[in-house]
Length: 441
Image (cartoon, rainbow, N blue to C red; front, side, top):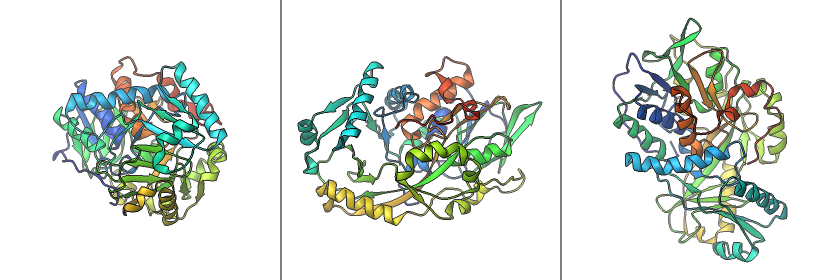
C-alpha cells in the first residue's frame, strides 16, 4: 500500500452472537462501533481488508466546518468536539488538532461565495474570518504572492489519516468489542422479514442489528438485498513530500492546489475536486440521478479507464453467500495513480510555495471517493429490512465528520436523542427528493 497506514491487531475468534455488527472498518465504521461499545453493547466489527486501508487513510485529513453544506454543518461542528473528546476518553492519538484552515483566492466570485458562507456560518454560531487583501497576503507570505483575500477558520483542524481509524479500533478493543480484519461480510440472514444475522467468510454472527459502513462497496452490497442505493465513485490521486519545507501553513487551500502538514513534518498535496471517472456498470445504472452532480463538477473530472470494472466495487453481479465474493477478491481498493495529476499537483505546489523545492516526493496514491447524487451521506435504518442501518456515500467528507456520523448511528441503534437531526441523511430521500439538490461544498 502506498498510502501510510498504522496497523492494529485482529481479534482471533469470531463470536457467534453480537448485539450489533458493524460492516466496514473505515472511519465511520470504527466510530459507530466505538460509540455502541461505550454504551454497553456487545459489538463486532468486521473488515474485509485492513482497518482504515481504503479512503479513510487516503484523504487530506481535514476536519472542517468551513464551506460545509448547511445539511452537514451541524454534524461537522459536533464532530470537531468529538475528535477532541475521543483523545481524552481513550488516550489514543488520532493526530487531531485545531490548527485552523486557511484559504486564499484572487477570484472575486470565489471570495463573494466565501463571504456569503461566512454570513450563514455566523448565524449558526460558527467562527470564520474573511481576510482583506493585506491580511491574506501577510498570512500567506510563504507564497510570495499578493492575494485579493482569503478565509481563516480557526476552530477547524486536521487529523492523521494513517493513525485515526486504527486508533479508534484499538479503543474498541480496550472496551471489550471485537475487531476482525480479512473477514468480509458476504451478506445478511433474514427471518420473518427482519435481520437475524451477518454472514461472513468465516462464519455467521447472530445479531438483530447490522450497520453497513462499506464505503465504495455499499451499493453493490445493498443490491444483494434488493435495496436500491444510488452511489458512484471517482478516482482521486494525491501525493506526499518529505519534511524540509520549513514554516508553511498547516492547512492551505487555493483553487490551484491544497497543502496539508503531515505528522512527520512533510506535506500532503492535492488538487481539490480533480479526479478520474472510471466507468462501471453501477455508474451506468445510476447515471440519470447523478446528472445534476456531474453538471456542477464536470470541469474537474476527466475520463478514466477500465479499472473500476476490474476492481468489482461497483458491480451489478449477484453473489452466493457460500462462495468468495468480490470483496474477497479485492481486499483493499488500491487503484492506479493518475501520473498526470500527480505531476500537475506537484508543479502547482512548487509554484505556490517555493519552499517545497527543498523536499522530494515521498509517496503517491489514489483512492475511490464514493458519492451520493446530492453529495450528502445516506445514514438511517432501511424500512424494508428492520435492523439494517446504512451509513455510506460520504462524498469525500467522511473522514472529518466520522465521529459525528458514528455517534448518530449509535443514537439510532439505541434510541437515544440524536446528536443531530437525522432527517437530512435518511436514505429514503434518494427515491425522488434528492434530485438536483447538490451539496454546496
